[in-house]
Figure 1 (cartoon, rainbow, N blue to C red):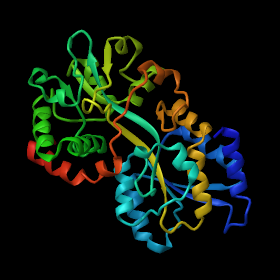
Figure 2 (cartoon, one colour):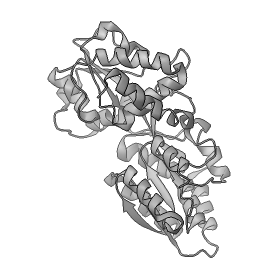
Figure 3 (cartoon, one colour):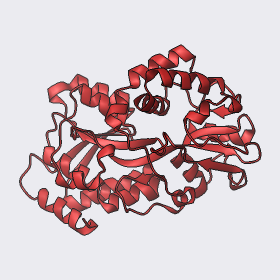
Length: 337
């Protein structure tokens, strides 16, 4: 479906009388470049977006406290484990949309159509090309003793750590995942600390030789100046899109959204989700925040293209999100702080 036809569909969908020409958006995305997402939707539909922004956990708690009186129409956040938690709490509702089913691949949306992924960040291996001649090619390789004392990663409290281990649990089972986690922790060059950009800075500073990071942090540094990650430093960093299994590719984190269970403007909420699946919005995700689009065929930004195309893990992300409790238990068992 073309960009023009999607926007025409949105305009037609919102032409009928509604409670109000507005949309209450609860969002944990904090990127200035998303402003075009909102303004173009408003221009195309005449619907005004009222934003409540904050930490995803805080927004979910707020929706839970508001109950049936919640004004929230859409929850937009940066990881599907939060969306799955919102679903489990009864804060989201199923969406019937042929457009979303057509545009969003099945593995990037909830099995009950309560949430949908709209942009992807692959979690991959970066390494010091001068120090690492044989970089890990799979996630399981990261637990190999040959990499002892070489790896930087975030803390176990971070959602990216939780979803990575949860995906490994889904593929290999809890026992194998615990063995992997112990080997991975044994290979840490330092105690887990900081964000993904700090892991990349660890490569530059020599604190570690291998770092795990989502792609958009590195792509952003290619596109613009990031403190401690100048072009000279980036030139010495290589990367690998590791395989999750012999047949499944790189682990993916999603930014996604769902319609609130008590949405007062349901039709507007669905129209907004359908807009996020349009070529226009998908290009904003790609160009504005250095992410990979969720919709196939949408071109990536120049900075993301530098990293190259990748095959993502096609595991059901709804199932992965259900493993977070098991992942947290394993973190404690292996001493992953």
